[in-house]
Each structure stands twice: as structure tokens, then as C-alpha cells.
Length: 87
Image (cartoon, rainbow, N blue to C red; front, side, top):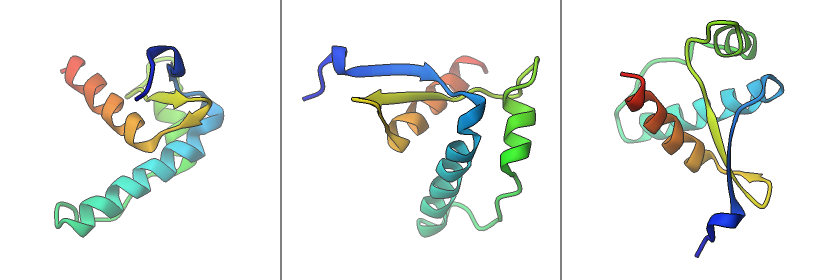
């Protein structure tokens, strides 16, 4: 069981653009495996930096950390929640 004091939610930093891209790649691989995606990822670390960390960001990423370990699953879940609130 995870205690609330062990969980930290924070916005992603520009220095984590490479990690964000790796999570995008893992998600697309999962989607390919279940037949939900057949395309190719058309983003890059530089595009992520430009679109997510500009003065008017296109999107935002929140990371959930447990004892300083960033969870890809949690970041996907929180990103999905964030996108629902921005609709």
C-alpha cells in the first residue's frame, strides 16, 4: 500500500524531455501490441521542449514519484486526467 506521504506529484521539467519521449514511445508500443496504433511517432526531444515548455504550452505532463522513482504508468494516468480537465 502506498501512503500519501510517499507520493509526490509534480510538473515535468524541461530537462526531462527525453524521459517524456521515452514514455510516449512505451505507450505507442503498448498501443501497437493491442492493435490500437499503427503509425509512427513524429515527435522528438526538441519538439517536446518547444511545445511543452514554451510560454504558451500545447500540453503539460505531471509525474508521480514514489521515493523519487518516476512511474511511467502514473505519468500516463495523470496526463490522461489532465487532458480531460482541459477539454
